[in-house]
Image (tube, rainbow, N blue to C red; front, side, top):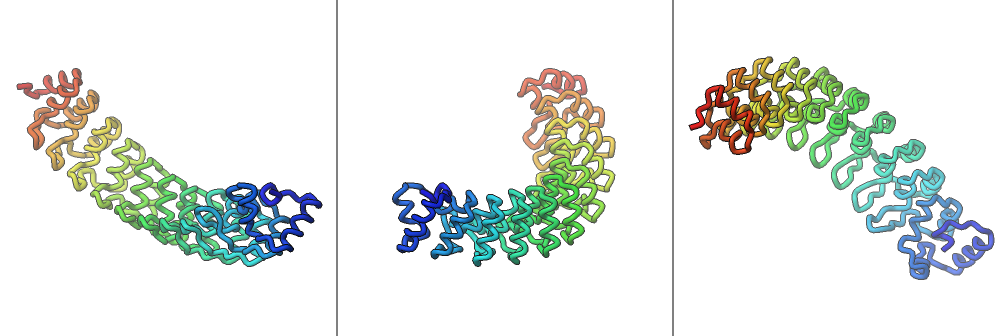
Length: 362
């Protein structure tokens, strides 16, 4: 009970010492049975009871003992909770700084999400292995990049952590920072040697990630540092496909200016205009049409951007595409015109537009 609650009362302290000297197991299996506390031992580190932990270590507690279902060490727990004195004590007593739990995490991994700089400095000073990957292939730099901890990333890079390492999905720390839009962090990783052109297992570059999420300044950085805006992923999508699909106008403007092919098709034959039309992004469609994207292009199913805009009932977008030269009577592979779609889904004003534009309802 004293261990679980962290009591340091002199009388209780004396009784604890007496019990330990009578060979009570300091790992507290007996106490666990008596008190019916599920995890009495980890609480020593969780609550930061330094003196009690020191007493247990003096009486034979294994400094690298693993606890809980994840099989973390006391050092994992103390690091995660940010208890600097406890971390220092465990390291002084020889705790294994590189020991992994069932998830493949080292104490260094545990120091990242909470961003306890004092704890991190202790762990780094203990000469931890920066290259250790968890079960998902993530290093500590992946974790800090994912959470946007710039100062932590700086410390890791300066300490020698390699920024080019990929995880099991092929993502580098730059993929994570680009996806989250952390500009300064992306600059740090690029300057540290992370290749802005690198692809993950799905063929996505960091530019695909930043374009999809609309992070304009990050996209600018990646283009300026050599990432090709015309590069395709495994689905055949370029960064312009990604930004068009989500309606990020300024990113689309940047990519068009950077030389991205407007008429490029993905594996299903869709152009960026197909994507922006399917989601009703009018301003992006205007940009693409004005920049020279052909609105008459069909995908592998024979659908044009007008089929998509008629399907969702976007009147103004349909007007734009018709005026840009898209045939309102064009048929896809199933023989359906845009009018079929607008009629089926009850988009009256779009039906009127298409009939007036020359689509024969018969």
